[in-house]
Length: 30
Length: 177
Image 1 (spheres, each protein chain N blue to C red):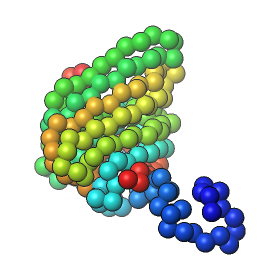
Image 2 (cartoon, rainbow over the protein chains, first blue to last red):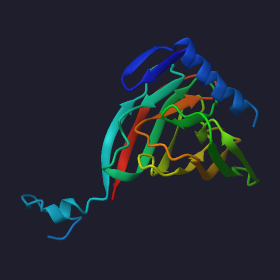
Image 3 (cartoon, rainbow over the protein chains, first blue to last red):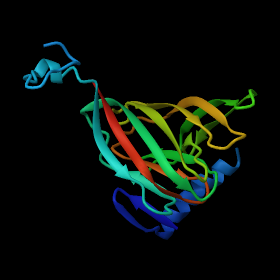
């Protein structure tokens, strides 16, 4: 999973992936 | 000299420049197949309120873009009224969620503008948005909400609900106080 911070695009850390998945999980419950 | 019409060679008086209502703070180009984009160092004491114009070139699927401020992932409240292109009306919302819903780009992209109120001040932060859903059986969502804390923020992140986005721009403007 790639994330972007300003001009830098890189692979997400496990912690960042977990954060994204947590946000996505809630979205899918709507 | 009367703003906003200027002539070549006019002196830009402070009073004229201070009457300019909207200033471009930052333009961020969206990368290739990214799941989230963080735009940092855009909210400050210079402005209370902001307009964020998001234009996505393409998405890997029809998806939602979810907005968060700083590292906060709780206490987001929002609701939208959706008027479908077929004419039907619906609505949805989230109380105490982990993000705000702001845009649904499709394979051919999408665009919207978001107004954000008081993100830097130690007040609750509000937002309003009107966004078209870029599919033939889509809708226009009009809504907004707030973040129920008093944290001061300088950055925001747009995260895809699934899949990735590629290309486009995020422009952040400040409304002059």
